[in-house]
Length: 117
Image 1 (cartoon, one colour):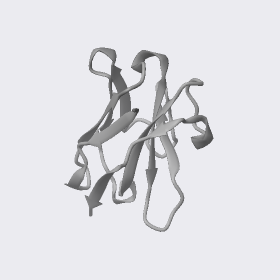
Image 2 (spheres, rainbow, N blue to C red):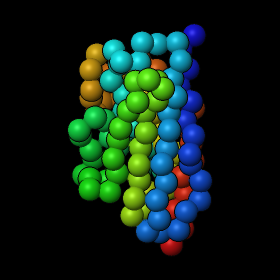
Image 3 (cartoon, rainbow, N blue to C red):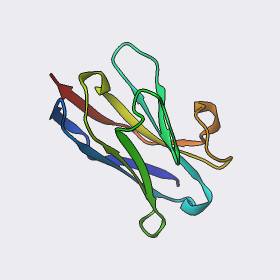
Image 4 (cartoon, rainbow, N blue to C red):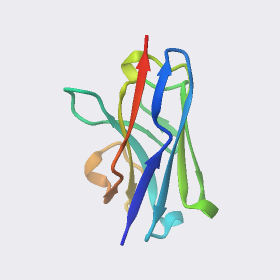
């Protein structure tokens, strides 16, 4: 059974940092492309990052990285803004990196990030 479990969310003041983790099990991690998405209240889920590619809204502030030995992907988030408040999801794609949600086969349950002004 494939599982993706996010952690690291929380409440932070604007300008602060958080690091999200997504630990996977049940899939060959090194063969999957991992991505991060987010969904703000009242909005549709949107792409955030995949390896070497970022949404314009987070470029220069967020960094995605992975550790094959730990089957884990990370999202380092710096200089956080109130508009970054959302539930953050990691996802795994067997088809390669993409910003399209439809390319991803498995999803985590999400972790809440709240940025106060």
